[in-house]
Length: 282
Image 1 (cartoon, one colour):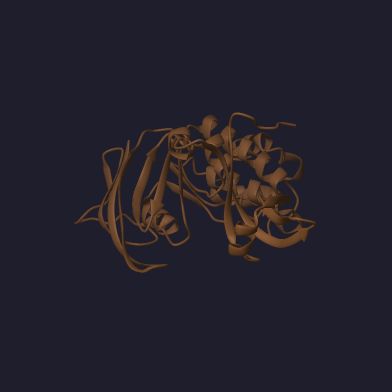
Image 2 (cartoon, rainbow, N blue to C red):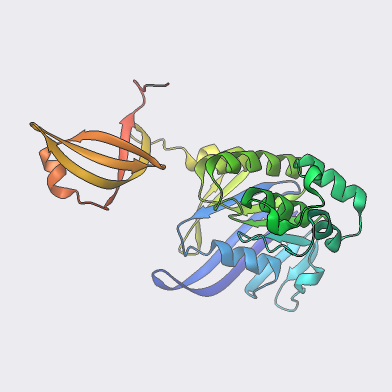
């Protein structure tokens, strides 16, 4: 059981704010933390890891990592942290990166086989692709068999295909090792696929908490599909107006009214919604 109840003053997007969170995880949970930039997500991970201090308590299996009398150093916390930038030793091979953490050749082989990296074990990490490097970083983190695995948007720099492949492998490793995992992510499909629990942070506070479907699914009103889009162009064709939008890396043209044309501008971020009773699937 992991219980986190901490408070820390931060300087966010809107000025001074208080990171004030209280939640509990069971062994083997996969928690995804989401929210806008500056909400306090990465700072929360750093506090849990012991990279930053805070007021309050962090209790893991009846042992205090943080309270008003005690601050357990990062080296003594049973955690592994995977960042966006991999942080690998480029002068070492894939296998040597793992064995640097722990001299356990059998465990290194198992992790590399699970992530389809065993054939590349003798390659220097400087020669690998971004997706391959992230696989190695995650395998290296699990060499410690941590009680808590912290992932700070580890897949955000990867293309969609590689991202989906690594999501599957992260979930496989999470289940295989029974690790409790906390991951920061903005990707709704990623959160739905991986998380057993979701927390949404806003200005340092938890505004939603629960299972992915409960937290993320839009349930109010008749508008069932809603997408964020950027207006790239607006043009008139005969008597109608057409807006070119970018939705999730795809270009879409939609017909808009003159009233909408008058209030929209190039570069504006909007939401596009449709009702659920007649969707077109292909």
